[in-house]
Length: 270
Image (cartoon, rainbow, N blue to C red; front, side, top):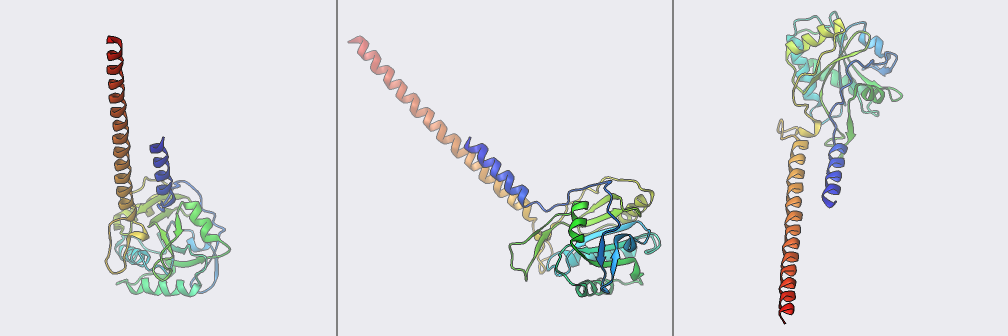
């Protein structure tokens, strides 16, 4: 009974700290959701998509963790994709942090475009913030999870997953590309599949979390994996302790029964 209770608590803890994306393939994103672009202009999601298949990322612009790395990696990949941005596809980066201003979207936009080595149609990649809770609604709809971090805000405000979500021009989710670094061919196939409205399974790849990143040390061991191993060791150790205690109790009881029977035999002989 105690072991079952312990396992229930462990299960609850693991689920409470899970910030991976809950995939919702085939779900439609409402195109009337409103956002604010880097210029402070109000735009609907439909206007941002501009009638094109779209690659969506959810980040926050103050992120001291993996967000900037993810966006620059995506920029590097898009430079190599054999498609024309603005014609074949659009990119939208949405800040899920409700309190970030448009100026931060502008700053992040400049950082990302400065990292690119070839001319890129800047109108094809929108950096926006939410309005009236639209970013949270969007995150919930696409299954993107994020949580307030216990770390000081100067270090990390949120823990969250990473990846790119492909949408048709009508806003249907057709694919999730997991992780920080994407391959040009994977991006191209995701766009082409979205253009045809074809839903495809996710690429099997570790979905890295913002909490797994240290700004001065590249990547460190995934936090959830470490926690899982530690919890497993604790559970196994407690199980062994409980089993040994039970075994000792059974052994002690057996000895008592043995001596009692011996005493009864002696009484019968008398």
